Length: 412
Picture 1 (tube, rainbow, N blue to C red):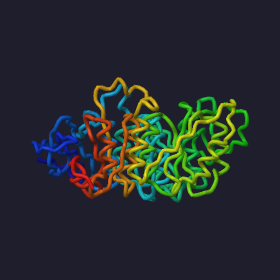
Picture 2: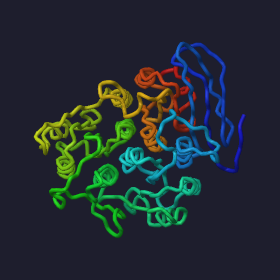
Picture 3: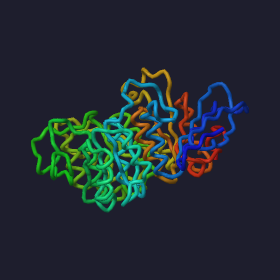
Picture 4: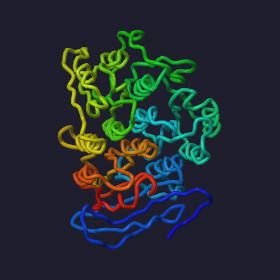
């Protein structure tokens, strides 16, 4: 049973489901198109499975935004637990949908500041994305990356649909400098202003600690994640976990034998108590992890460094998300008051749907785990099962996550 609205497609498929085995009945809800038939199962512990998808990466990001920042005019069923945070987006982050690097750090920034992450083409913002920005009517839009990632025309298009908003471009000389600039812009204390060109916080080009000696610079939660910027799998789960805990995610060249100097200087300046490098030695060298331990703390107290990794990208996702949502760390603020919990599942072999999903999961303070497109790995199954969620949110259509993934008991 489906409803078609013009050329725009979105699917939210809801089935009562379990981590168990017996076939039961299915309830399907579709918005904008015919729903995907997915078999349902029932057992001792039920979870509702919801698929949020559009007809491409750009409209999927919009549907994810609508499912979190919903209103009476949006025919999309909300996902995630009922929380005290407002569902009105104060900020919108816009990143390239053709690359992953800039969006990985933008997702926790968007979650922290209370808004979605949307995707754009390099030279043209898709109409569905412009419509969503106009619907959200944020106070601020952050365009992430330099002009090679998102052209000046993109900024012009955004400014036309939200003329009352501040539209800022945040970027650095490369993906690593952009990651630092995004994190500084979103997470530093209000006592410090990042260097700007034009109006304050208009274009943040590159943070240079040498120019700001003596400033009171510190991240709100006293901790940060560090992931490689060369690939996306390990950073996806970390991006959602960072957002849920109001922590930034800093990207580094993970294959390097040592920590780069700008990141070292940034960590020394912000002086976090905890550092969480993500991924095994193949993607995050032991030299970088050792250097993270050596960064001189301002107050004389050593940083606590904990590597989060597994045997492959799915085990790393399991370990990162499960650790971040366990008593080992303490749950994200307010989660213990939730009466319902959710788990987000995204394709770990491709990045677009997971980028917007990481911002949504982080905003809702819920974990995100990655899966194969064709089937659910054992590590992902156990990660979801460990959380005992009331709801499992699949990000993307069947080409991103097959119906077999939705059948939570059928593993790879």
